[in-house]
Image 1 (cartoon, rainbow, N blue to C red):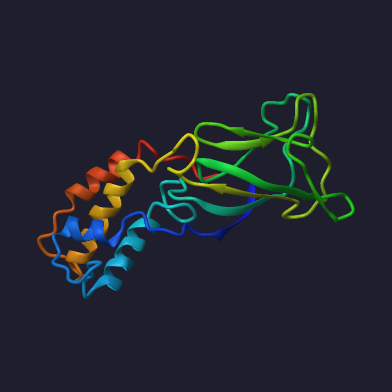
Image 2: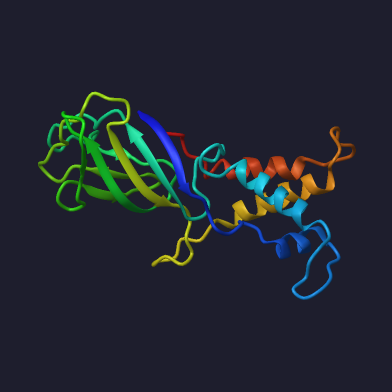
Length: 212
């Protein structure tokens, strides 16, 4: 079981640009590049809609855009050779790359592991994982709370080779939710049709994964 998780680097770009939200809401803009007097409010709505489903606290369980995480376990799983349960599954798919793996040895010192020598990376669907090499076992760790740490990048990345673009359904969901929050600012919404949001939320459940 994962004992701690921390996002080290957040996505640098929004899922939905302000220009896309202008078009979705049919807003009048001015200037070049176009701007709107409530750009700050619009950006907050996009962020709030994104946070509902993005890695960390979002219910979708996936990383939407490239981001960097560090997760920890109390120790490695059972390490019999070729044990199919010996892998450590990484949360927030899709996995882009594993950047580092380290553990505390029985003396409490950190030991850095080497991919291809000490472990292999498995790019599964939906979860990526790390596992011991064939006929190998995990080392013994100290009996402490966060004895194993993995740092990795995850998220949809259209610049990857091959490209792995963000599903259109995710982008449409953020547009609809952000737009609804912008148009309905009172504590009690009146005459607000939430059917579209429910439909997108139900459709997104086909992409939902378990929280590790």
